[in-house]
Image 1: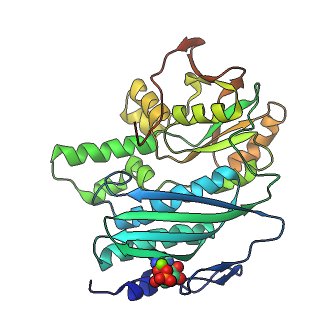
Image 2: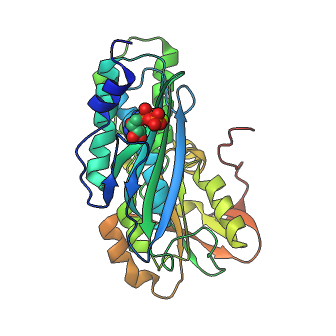
Image 3: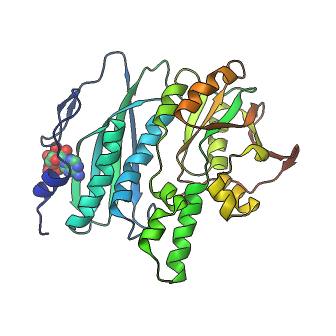
Length: 325
Ligand code: ADP
Ligand code: MG
């Protein structure tokens, strides 16, 4: 290793403290953090493993972005305000240009969302990135998966499916063996959606105390909706005709492929949420100000998810991504 562990941390991960609630950040045995009185601490962690969560050779800034974005998305889904992050980094070698890119992707998203890196761990091993995020929320307003009731309307943010399509675009290029113009690939809007997902923090805030249930879609809309239904003890009727197909997807794939990406594709990190019918319409302008949202169905009594096309129930091979299946 050209650069020692301590120099590496100092150079790439230790920055002047930005938040006044960070009493002690990187450099001591642990961070000292001041939680605002009356707030609940919200904690989440997610790990990215090379070849499983990102492709070998991915631009390092996209890995830094993605590692933080997937965690921020969990805070968004709880309606929480991001505050602090810890980074555990396992690196096969010290590659300074890789670290430079990785840190810039991570810090750019951190600065934009007001979260501060306050500690972590650095070890030698296979490329694995684990981030833990901490935030806070008024516990009375926190969003959970479990509060949806029969009769509530079901919404999704943004245009899910694009990230999964972007991943397929990348995989196809890799498998084709054709020479690729890396810059052109990097500019592809679908590839960008996969690499630089935007956590829906503003929408999460707007939903606080209003949505009866919420979760982020990490493993596919259908599978994640099943989880929300199970947590709430209700069933959902999903209207396939109302799925928000992006222009980009519609322009490049047929209807069946678009539907497949929308229902089964992961990695978009959109929010899935439910609103009581009363007041939903009045709330929409405020939600739209944070992010486009689409009503895609409703909650009913029963269990599981029913998909409907042109008023007729259709079977959709379902299930989200499961690491152990
Ligand atoms: P210790 O051996 O006491 O756990 P370390 O040498 O692992 O301490 O870490 C020294 C300091 O650097 C700690 O404050 C730790 O939180 C921080 N740190 C280590 N690795 C990282 C990293 N990848 N990103 C941010 N902070 C880190
Ligand atoms: Mg340590």
